[in-house]
Length: 145
Image (cartoon, rainbow, N blue to C red):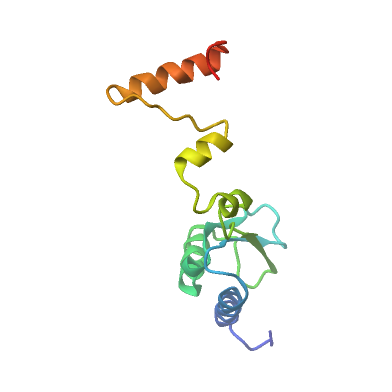
């Protein structure tokens, strides 16, 4: 930053550059959060922007949060040195390995393979039968297989 440049304009440019970087480098499904800390006045609290989807973090959002902090806190100065920490949480792309193995199998085949799936054959009061089966499984009933 040059000496004659306004700190507000410089900060807006930095925030815009950061959000443009996020748009280029981070997938839409991932979560992003920011923490901004004043390094010269350590008594100031960290300004945080909670984790949001990447497409919800825009320069206007970051700037509005900073503006509120600056207005409410007279010590927080834009001429101080600020550190920006980016928190990035990668969200899973698929349902895991099991989804690929079970794809296309019927419930009867799955219930034979998986011990956690139980088929209730009752036509009437099937919820009650399912609860009785679950209680027998939890209690370790010898008749339950």
